[in-house]
Length: 517
Image 1 (cartoon, one colour):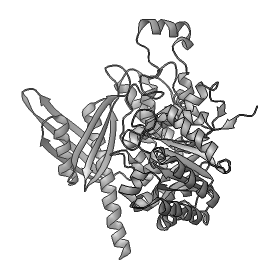
Image 2 (cartoon, rainbow, N blue to C red; image 1 turned 90 degrees about the horizontal axis):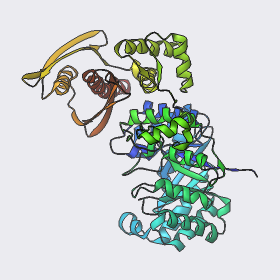
Image 3 (cartoon, helix red, strand yellow; image 1 turned 180 degrees about the horizontal axis):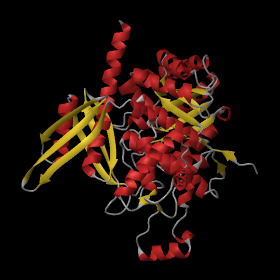
Image 4 (cartoon, rainbow, N blue to C red; image 1 turned 135 degrees about the horizontal axis):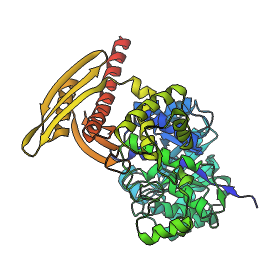
């Protein structure tokens, strides 16, 4: 029997980016879209084009540069939204317009200030209008799980008649539970006479921790598209996690006899990149991609895994891009072995990129005895993105700190700004605070540190540390990231990473004003 395909609709760049503080630049969105395409997701929802000029440009860049997946844009059931959406996605070889309007009485009364008849007409007109641009139109009745069922079915039937090819049923506020959500999908299949003319999709939020379970229950009742995000990021408690959905279907293929096009060996790499660029840290016990997901501490578990891995592991670490042996390289390793290891980890680097990462690897190998796969992932993330490196305004040349329980924390920082060398010193509440104040003196931006996170990337006392920060600048949240075996250096790099984003934005704005004149 031929197995049906499950369509993986990734909305990391749209709903995922709506995580508080997870704002992405156009370059960062494009970088994530590239790895999503390499991972072979079926659809990339690139953003909400009408929401801001930056988001419009980000969606447009993805449509122009990404091949493979369908490129989708979100639009309210408003003509101007649909116009903006099409203007951004029309460059894609395969495009999709996703339009939506709320159907629950709660939203109609308190948000839309409309009656059911008005909403029904607006939904139909939006689909008809979107159909003028694209044959591939998706419609979502927002807050479907709290909508009157008869009205929900009426809207779904009408928009399919109007031309919608995908019907997405959102559990917008994560209110539903699995047996209830599966029954909703089952009832829609029975009650909507033309439902088989469209693909049924689901979009589940995780407010009650049931997004993945709800999505899987919908698959059992005929849903064939799952909207999800990398690491489950998104509004409030997030969305259904792509890695959990895909690995559930593969691991329990006895219950879900479906196929997926996703290259699961890319999962860990993509998870790390999304965490790095959004600044949203993956919890250690997160299913599939958490650092403890394949770790065993209990003696009984360790003995079982050593005897036969299947005793306590239902998936192979290699299936998501990890390896059994975490220690892979040291300071005596050569370029050939290094290149092969990166290839095994799923990276495709140009010769110049490989040279750059290899130099960083040698420097790191001199500073720590054991190099782990997690370290290699970090090195590639630090060095491969040429666009970010080329547009660095400030770079760290030197940092020296003095601290102690009886000393005033002081930092001396020397930065390179193009060909200029600038040095400043400052005192603070601690060495990191002192370093940040010294950087502020040099760069001159008025920012507020709103979040600071430090974590070890790998094991051992010489572990590579990663620092993720958030700065508030002109009411915007800017993410920064840095890594080093020295946590003060990692902290300074993270701060500069965020400062450089501000500097680039400021420089681009000045240039656009000059050009407009």
